[in-house]
Image 1: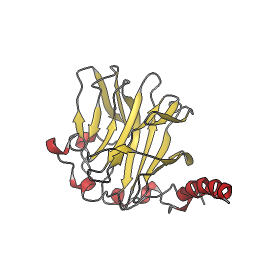
Image 2 (image 1 turned 180 degrees about the vertical axis):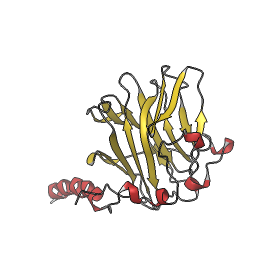
Image 3 (image 1 turned 45 degrees about the vertical axis):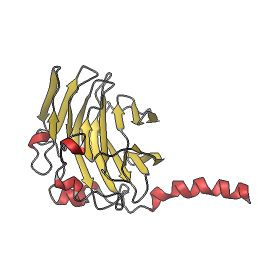
Length: 230
């Protein structure tokens, strides 16, 4: 009987993501309220959710054209990133669209469409809650790898075309699901401890930052897996 229970437990865990309701990013609640980044202007000029531009001390490419944001730095440290609020709650305050709506009890969903840069560049995204249940982890997208923290989830190329990534934080516990172009590549991922409330994309250090972003959309009403084609 013990062997049977041990066999069934992993099956139950991997089935959780399939039980999440579907929702296309076009129907995200925050998008409908005007809170998204559609790469039609520089992030800090985005009217619905203005991101703070964290500048660099190195030459940086930063431009919007044809509905895409391209940014690139060639230094591994102090590269360009965009965030709401400051890193520490004591030195900054996140705008209300994130702090007032995103809660661990509801979970949240984030979708971004991105083409990675060819070369040693990394696009990173992070979100977390500043409370006792806070947790976070860094999603990184590179030329030929998608990583969760230091764990490589896929070696599929990301610089050949735009690819759509769906990151879901399930309600309650510290558990995430990740899809790439509708295929789940991360199951029951865990976050690391955090006591910061932030929503950040761009660079996370260690490698030169960069990417070509088509859009970044989120839904703070809950956890939704990608909608399947009819």
